[in-house]
Image (cartoon, rainbow, N blue to C red; front, side):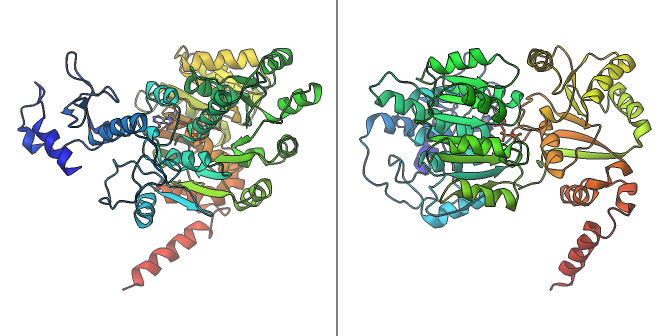
Length: 539
Ligand SMILES: Nc1ncnc2c1ncn2[C@@H]1O[C@H](COP(=O)(O)OP(=O)(O)OP(=O)(O)O)[C@@H](O)[C@H]1O
């Protein structure tokens, strides 16, 4: 590594806009530290950024130590025969550019256990379970099909997120998993990547023309299923990997036709999938992967029986369960679905994403509309595109109309009473920027990747702190900063006890009325005070 750094420094080509002595500049460790290439400048062969250095082993233009590692790993995967076991090497702790591999993927050197533990701790990854596979640090190091690695790069996924680093190898070792990680941290790809790798491997190996589904992903809303299926198509492009979307509101006949014509993955809501399975004979014998996205929601009353019914029609699948909010009850249930489940958690379990600033405003119900109009008329406070969450379907329609009348903004609403086509059209308008505000019930609250959204307004605070965490999470993806404006008043007292500690942990101001409410008093404020005094009295 050092040797390469020195050579890279020798080969530094200084851009016209930068007159610093190249010897003074440290070699870029990570790809994201590198700037974009200007027209005519060399580009990194891995990520396309400014190819500031020349790789000593290949003579390729490269932007950073990280991309060099990826490049060499790729070349090693193509040229070197696999060896039986990876040799352990002692690498400097903190060198994040090293690909870490376990013996499943022997081309890359592995780190000693103590260093893997240190790395997990640095990345905020906790694991629990027997023989948990080591994390990976680049997509090309874990035996994924080349085409899939190419699709990941084309989608702008230069390197795995922490949850992907741990989940992908664990999933590829066919273990069942229960995973919690912050909203917007990349959980979807963490299960889609191994599914796509598995499906294309099975199809390439088998000789029959039979193409029954190999994997099922369940999610609680139609919109989320649509989004997951879209992402699966993007990542699985060019591979023997087809998908079927099975959600209510779309004609059942089309969904059956698609499945009968051969697919690998079904993405669906539990109710519609049960409906389809009852009415038609779909062969599920080859389904070996079963994913419950937003598992805490899917194992709640309403969905649980349907999800279990689908699970029971499969024969011992690998079960992967994901959510940003998990509790002991779900953990217990997850153990009844599969044996030797690996528990993985990344970041802040059951807390809002740290990147979202929570601004709680005490506002009486009668004044809420006036307040939201004020916010939306203010250039300083309104940062469109924005999602407004309300508690009722009628409320969503009424508020969207009222906002248009009061502010002149184009607004759409989304809720469960609209037809699937109306819901699709509203979402399309919002995502393409045709309208800047969407008013939604909880339908958009979980899992939705509303990429450009940096502001959400909780006009009605949801009934549970978990839904609060998911709704607030719509304001940030991949660590981008966002803001959640939250209206509360005495009518929301059912959530006060849980809300106050959440706000305090995040360092968000607690409105006086909320702090002084008798529904809050003595709970978290008291224990917080005790904790501070305790720590002060320690030597
Ligand atoms: N490795 C990666 N590199 C760059 N972008 C990524 C990577 N993985 C995922 N993303 C992008 O990050 C965004 C958030 O990912 P995703 O929707 O999977 O988050 P999530 O953890 O499922 O969130 P939520 O709990 O809200 O459902 C998406 O836009 C996705 O395309």
